[in-house]
Image (tube, rainbow, N blue to C red):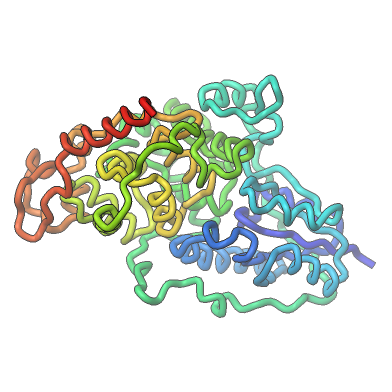
Length: 451
């Protein structure tokens, strides 16, 4: 009798360069399984609304790809270890194959499955256990991580997708994707999303981006240009491997800067291996004493920031792009995050929560490390007293057309006035002046030093 194995899918929704599928196929028949587990991550870390929209499309795409090679995708909902144990009993499978992931909530699940679970590398450029300090711990400084990673690069050539997956004699029952209600309805803000989930689209985007990667370093900071790869949600859901992206830009002189950004994703996963609570706990604990604003006025300011009604055009454009598309340009992510933390003096964790719900690529490691970097509270972070000037940033990075697109109230304002237009009918006044906000933030830092 042919052995049967489960392939437990998480954020690795692809067939190409997917070692778990190849290992399972070598054992015998394969049952691919995705478990929607809202119990294990607890309320704070259940995937957000925008991610659920993407997940629906990604699972549709993967199910179609599996059908083409004689297989199918089994969908179940519940605590992953219980669901997988039940599937082992139902199917007669003896083994579970899966890729390694670093989110802290998976540890207990993997331990519960014990020797029945075989974990494989494939979610990072190199196994994170190989990219460690002399003391054997994950790096907390990116520059040191990058130097160590170079000793293991390039990654192995991506593995081809299986041409066929052996099917079991009997398939277990599957939930219907439609019954999971992953698509938003009230409000259906995802009707404006202009991205296409799935491995095929990821491969198309990589091929298109490779042609322009030589201009990446010059254009990646310009919100009005298509200078970035737009691969982040595909990488987040594992529709394409980091190794495939690395090799996809081979032969291009401008690829090094892009590869450093790609490696940042691996670095952030290493940070959360060392500091699993990084989404909630300051990496530098002295900032626990920082006096963030609270109360009604702070809550109103937070809502204005979320809705893109701060009176700072570059900030409002970014926040409206996020709401409308589930994505935001990386330079603008830094500007909007800095504005919430430094100009409004609102705890970075409120921003973390909003991005987690609104971004299609809200990766636990990236979201945590990036927010703490901007806040200055992290282990390898910007200093708190460095305060981005959003009006200057807007002009420096030529954001005029970007603002006119996302803030239609300012569509008729020409450069250079677009960055700081003054009173405009229908557009809010600045929620706070830049100089006033800067002084308030610096005073908070001074109080912290003297505490």
